[in-house]
Image 1 (cartoon, rainbow, N blue to C red):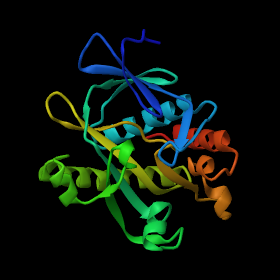
Image 2: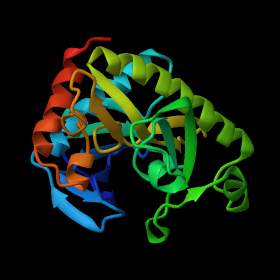
Image 3: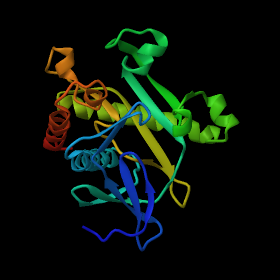
Image 4: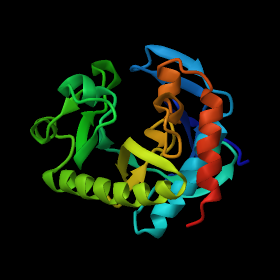
Length: 243
């Protein structure tokens, strides 16, 4: 493990540390778990190492598909080296199947396969509860340029296509997922943050029972139990799948 430098940011799931190179950071994955905008808090044993391993594998897979990410290397079981970026304060959510807030907002039945995948934008602001926003809101708040918003959409759909195909080989259904992007010192847009059961809804395609299907943070949100086992199952299936 590399020596950790100055702590530059601590979020709900990760801690960022500076390195001797101002363009490079270390990302430490925590075991802490939160839900409902941190109203529910807890811990998932081994989550940091599990999410780090999953993110490493999926970011390397996406790099091979031509998606630029901030990932450089895994430096410890719960730590990666990454390119320093300025995060665009927009959470990009891709939905393939109706679940969660989409069902509550629009009255769509849970589990309904959407006629086409959709992209939603959320303002990354904990104090406001990360509200759903439109492209007009993004422009009003100067969160991103119209060109960047178009790029976010295009990247999200491309990542979704690759992820669905890869995860299907792991007997996992990609219900929906959240992406975050950042700009490096050259203003290049890079996929950042993580891709894990914390940020994706994943269902077991080989299991007909809906409650047993859930292999993501909904097990923590809904007190379904066996959270650690579900995260570990996702890791084992993903790491067993070559790319």
